[in-house]
Length: 365
Image (cartoon, rainbow, N blue to C red; front, side, top):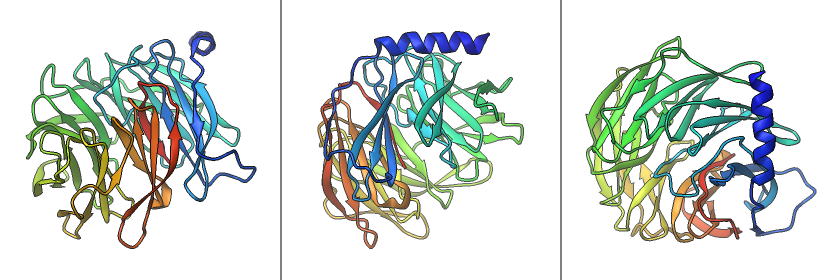
């Protein structure tokens, strides 16, 4: 009965999701896409995920718009990671910050299919997945909460999995798993803290282990493939890197390496662990860092390594690290760059314009 109710709710919301005006860089191709880029509308009248086919040259072509069965906020979430995709590429997850739930999509040969919607805590803004284990960051409730993806393409809440952050009104930005799924991390903007949790075999998180961020306002972050943590810091527009032990204890490797730009709020690491990129909200550009074997980060050039549309709010690299995409909510655009495999340098390519404002979250595969 609950599945039927959710289906009816999804169908009703799909009728009121606004048509998304999109200007695409190139016409649709009959060839099989090399990958996809997903963003969510975050519309308060009815949230939806917009899927683009990614061409071999990095170009984006609109594929479909699918309702999440939930509501967005039509306003900035102050987050990173409003969307997440499973390692096998079979499922996509989206937070619905306006209706306090999370949506699960099956990724099929025909595209996205809404599979389930599960209620979580107040104002979910970020979601992370490791295997079939999902954790959601509830910004309004100051908690994290665990769920599982079942074989029947549903989400099931893990009993007694809700854990607190360091306190109340911490303005948390992101949640993410370590590469092996044994740890979770959360950044708190208001308290200058980074929380870590040890994930038990039953999926329940143990913690938090609350630690001071090296720099002010830790925001977006990613674990590298080496298990180290790389974090952007907004006020100083900088990046810090940390070693992380099995208990989640952080040790600073590089502290607040500035990029001389404005408001580095979002960060992504390439899958080979050689480079990190920040999207800088205040200067509307991307900065490139190199990552040494010991996890130390170094700025490349002046830090202005690629201009984006105004108001970036998230970014991701495609599978294979060939392309970097940056979502700019205020400008209604996705900026795109090709990534040189030898040195990680960026070359601007045609992106997407004409999106509605308020979009949040971007995943590239």
